[in-house]
Structures are given as structure tokens and as C-alpha cells.
Length: 103
Image (cartoon, rainbow, N blue to C red; front, side, top):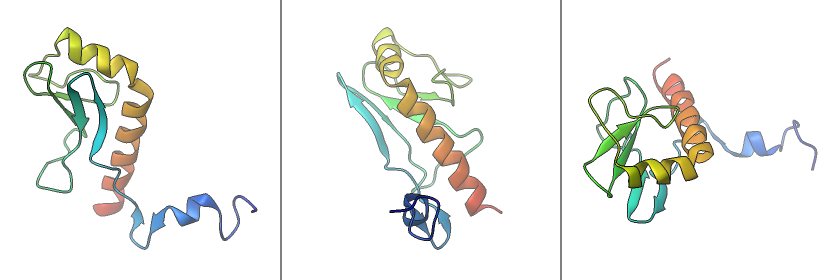
């Protein structure tokens, strides 16, 4: 298979509308679940992920830090730190998806 050609992985992962929405559950570890809910009615200002379990519900932004008005428990922070590359990659995909949807 030639990458970058007509049948490259990049081309196969796209829908006719552009970028696919990532799976809603990003991480599930030690009773903490990190997910997005953009297939429903969530807003994107800023793009964020929801952290459930291990304490009160929280929202995190692109660098795994809580968004304004939210705090993380030590257990939530540990799960985020253990999975930071996945969190960052998912946020980037979500940002790209939003750009495609609202051109």
C-alpha cells in the first residue's frame, strides 16, 4: 500500500463530510471515565472532555487541566496524567471535527 495515495489510511478514515467524531468514551480507568458528549447537545466553547467518577464531575481542556469553575480530585488527575497523550489527541480530533461542522 502506498501512503499518501488514493487509498492511504488518511483517506479511508474520512467521511464524505470530513473528519469523523472520535469515540465518546476516551478513557475508563480505576473508576474514572473521561468522555465527550458532542454527539448530543454539548457545546464546544472551549472544546472539553467530561471526567466522571473519583469525585465530582469535572471538565478538562486540551492540556488535561480543568476548565474554569472545575477542580480535579487526586484520583482524577492521576488517570488524566496516565493518559495525557490520548486526551490531547482526542481534543485535537474534536477541534478538527468542529471546524469541519461549522465552516
